[in-house]
Length: 290
Image 1 (cartoon, one colour):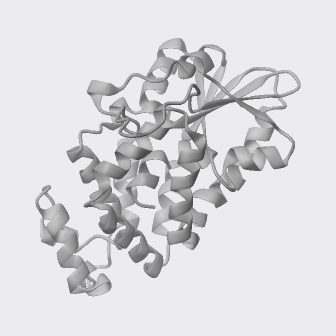
Image 2: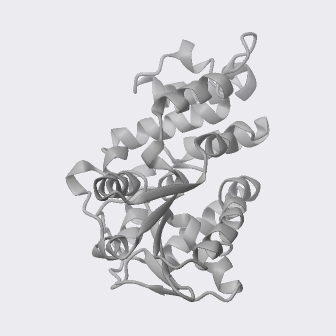
């Protein structure tokens, strides 16, 4: 999971580049017997200066009685995330990151994050997965992206003001545990993928985010397939396996008598083994909103 997966596994900004503008939005509607479930593809961070969501998000939100997200962001406690990283993200006292990933890789990592405020001594204490996530977050902040302007935070604030219920498919510990439970070789692959992207991050994210805002599902699926080919085992753990775990929960929502808005990273929805693909295989057809 590199920066692209972190952003629409993601983020969203209007940087159209050469992308084709579609009439659709990254929101799909599926009808149950008595209700509608809207699947809204999120990008987790946006710049404050360009954070307006496509109109389809407003439509889905207004027509929904309750929301479901990857985690219950309304009850999220930042202290819990800090405690988790201290407990599961740090190496034992007798180990150093440079000794696990090799000095050459560590020097490259230090070059990227040292200028962004992380000293070598602190970095040496991180497990590879936490080093990779730290690099991702610092890169995104450097490019101007803000989690407070992201899709989930915007919608969660509206829901709080409107007293709409928010629930989550996963807990914070379960989500962070996906990384902490990776084998050391997979953690290093995750770190390598993140390091590889540092030079091209701005261009690739611009392409991804243009496809998101344009609702270009085929383009998003194509970009996702690149990640699948590059790191299939890692992708399965972080994306497709989670999609399958969410599927019965979404199908249960479709048996209800009130409308729901489901907000998850866009790349969980599209492509082979994406949520839309899995639902279609079970007989549920989705209509993309404009």
